[in-house]
Length: 352
Image 1 (cartoon, rainbow, N blue to C red):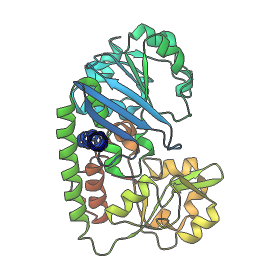
Image 2: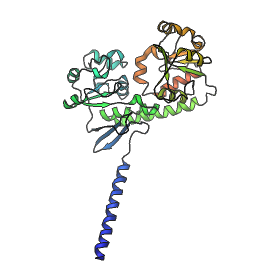
Image 3: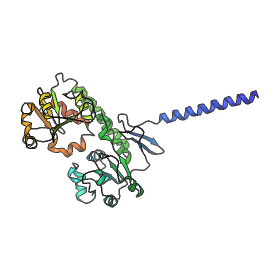
Image 4: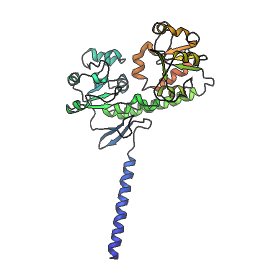
């Protein structure tokens, strides 16, 4: 009886030790993503396990196992094109939403040569042409879910096409947004190149932050413009507001809670903008274009007196590359804050 009892105790200890060893092994599998709130990529069985959390539901996940690199991708956002271009994987793109919004010369040329299919996406990702997707012989469709769930996902899955949501636009940190390049590295078999690229961006971003910390008298800044009856500006917890704060701008709404956009009346903007010295992202490349869209802009206290900057002289370049290159954005912001006219800018020009 005593021997049986000792054997039972040893058996229980062995089982518990086995569980601890298994848990320890699981923990040792590192997530390549250190900044993203929604993306996880881990090595597994010679491939990659991708886990994407839905931004609006902590218990809703998208699971994907990538065993082999793909050479046939359809991408529905210009940001996705920018990340693939940075990895020199433009030839893996076989479908895009609309050529009008493409910056990459190689992707433009391949589309014009009918090597990339335009997917007839009129107003949203929900209207994408399934027939065009089949024509492109794509293996994966990467979409942004701006309009919620992807209506054709189940149908495409049955046809052998995987649909992958990309929530880089919901990230609240600049490096979290840029880290989605690792997803495209995993998809195309260029993970090492993607890791190296992100490491380079991360170091350059931190270096630019150190430079910006030496700006001791940040100027008061406002961002946005009027659409309809309201002025829309980034809320204080949004990606753009946080980037402004990291850059050293004194953004006048940086302490207003929220991760989306603020909607204010023109009267409030005129009152709050009395001491504004910089106006960012009015949405137009010239002052005359601003007035053409909103004649009341001439009454804004900062229209005539502030320096105005925007990326709209080349919007396609901004939307394709800025998510991946927050270090370039910080470099532009440093040039703007210090009013350094001779320094190269990647995205922004002064609006005159």
